[in-house]
Length: 210
Length: 259
Picture 1 (cartoon, rainbow over the protein chains, first blue to last red):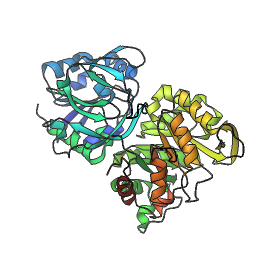
Picture 2: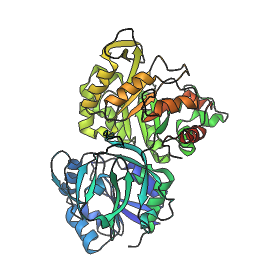
Picture 3: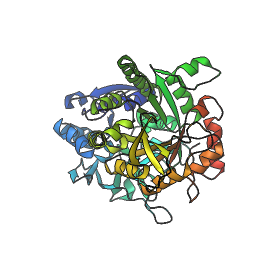
Picture 4: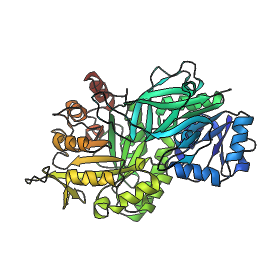
């Protein structure tokens, strides 16, 4: 069993992600206070709903300094999911402007998908979308090319450096599906809702040694 | 490419599936969670569980069921039936539901849509709209009905769909009561009219009888439904169609489908 520390700011319902991580073989530690992260070896940063509430929960809960230490200094493997990914960006433009953790040189911007005939596509993007990943990405090891993964979001990361983008999905634009820089990985899609492929991604995260 | 979704709907009473299920395996037929897991394995893209329990005790059983679904099934699922308040929704989302659907309560109290969207985010608020055709053009000849179709309202279907969207609905689940149960096909005209007029996804429901009906409602074009997803119940429960066969057929028709 691999021990995984999951950040719980009491903003999100974590049931699905907890269930999926346990299915993938994680020995889960739910961390409601920063001190509970002290002995972490591997971290999950979830997030659903409004950016303001998610980042507010992280800041007000006092999680930011210890996360910076564990992720940037100790370089522990971490995965951010959905708004968890978005919080890793420098700032979000969702309903105002909010400062993020700044681990990625990226802004969180609204999707502006356009179909081939020039008409706008639906936002939020809801459903299963085929996803292209960069060869050799550790989280996608063992997956078929272009796996269908489950998305539900209206915003995504716009990265300054294309080298940070690990996967994209085509939805009337290139949507940033996953980013990775060293030990820091994140997905916009929901691996916990993406059936067998999602489970494989979580298993890969548990095995990952960056 | 974003794929078109196929969604089986399960009517749940006291934590069990009840309406119109006829599986050879009776154990499977009785249990909402087993049946949901079976459909997920067969390729369902999402599941909908509708609580048709009337009693308070049954309500808490439904929340327990939702918790067990979340534990056992890792595809998204929506729950609905009898939701009237932020507290109702909070209990269901905390039990692990991904989305909730509201119907009559949204028509009676449109502020509920606004409140839920601001409290939990639009992504989890599905507004279910039941419609019936009328002789009047207003501008579509469809109007909204509530209380399981028993009560007509003043709302014209398209106007209500737009109102729901502007109040923060994340998706619309549109059911034609005229077509429901007929197996003669989905109501393509009103589905298409609403699909083209709103910028949120539209799930079509009511009337599916053949695989071609699904192709018609999901296809893009003047004579098609232009829907993003299609929902059916008894057709799947009675094994008249399997989800696996249906999705292979739709893929062969050139529709974007997850296999």
